[in-house]
Image (tube, rainbow, N blue to C red; front, side, top):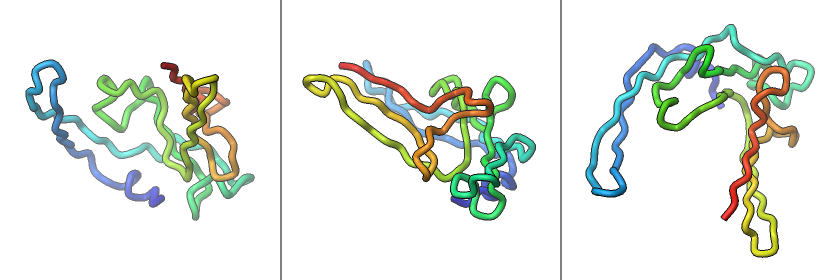
Length: 126
């Protein structure tokens, strides 16, 4: 992932098309996309597979501190991190009624925020 693209870009307005479910009316939402703050990072130089290819730093933003996306009120973001990662889906229960969605660093470690806060794992059930 090219980290510098998010760190160096200027603030910009992003528009997206939506459809209202009950009436099927189309509408456009605009939001401000801000650049990421290079002062907010987790140092992964002691575990280089987790970080950005050159810097070994994972840049993060906590919406209550500052936000890179004006869509937070719509999507409910709690934590964002620009790093190498993958998403894992696993199903459990007699009829696969539970789905666990988790985000991991390349070495398999669960992606979390600073100090282990904001673990990126959710369980959905039927």
